[in-house]
Amino acid sequence: MLKNITKLAFCLGLVNGTFVVCSQQKNNNVLNRNEQYNFLSENELHNLMKKHKNLSILNRKQTEHILSLIRDTNADIVSFRKNADRLIRILMEQALCQIEKKKYVKQSPLGLYEANEVKYDDEEICIVSILRSGNAFLNEGLKVICGASIGQILIQRNEETSMPKYYFEKLPEDINQQQIILVDPMLASGGSASMALQLLLNKGVKQENIIFLTLVSCEQGLNKVFQQFPNIKIITAQVDPILLKDINYLAPGIGDFGDRYFGTIKKNTHPIKV
Ligand SMILES: *[C@@H]1O[C@H](CO)[C@@H](O)[C@H](O)[C@H]1NC(C)=O
Image (cartoon, rainbow, N blue to C red; front, side, top):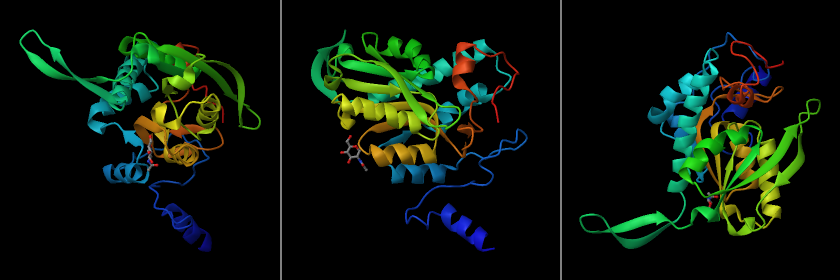
């Protein structure tokens, strides 16, 4: 009984004094493939954005069709890639929406108008990919920002300790002068994102100049990243209700995004080890 009350209190966020969304915290370490998950309500998403002023969640109407196709475990690689690319394209355009604009007067074929354009040249923007899955953003990213530079950071989770470990980085020398778009398809516990962000800060990048794009995230990961880096911006297509902590996967989630996007598993296999 007491345990249940504590659980409820935790769920309502009374324990740490802040209001959190938390619709379903039950069994969040157990993977049950027959469980049906409820997505966060509009109200819960709204509260999450109220809590984190620098968080943007894409309009559900704009993304639910595409995301449903991507989540489907029966999607073949052609469909998976095509739809992941569509969603990534939307996120990339959203990133540009959030970058400061410069205004000036330009000529259309018919007259003058006030142009409102991203204040950076392409070359002043760096897309930083958290390897391997972040590379999935490069196809569409480079269509939107053709002249962007590409940075790469390899962080992998130690299978035994579950802790992220840094391996490699290759970043432009003048990265501290650039507008950064950091990309990783999934934000689960937030461990690797935090590590990558810290690395960028150590290179002199300002938080204000970082936009982090992620297809699917969860409340725990968002909390962790914003706690450490309150001045970055995060844009996510969807916030999933459950983080399966032991295996660090989101539910209902997408599965192993990298394996599915890069074709390193075959469809209808369930490679997620529990
Ligand atoms: C959001 O980020 C901006 C800078 O990018 C910062 O000035 C502001 O304080 C942040 N908002 C919150 C609620 O932390």
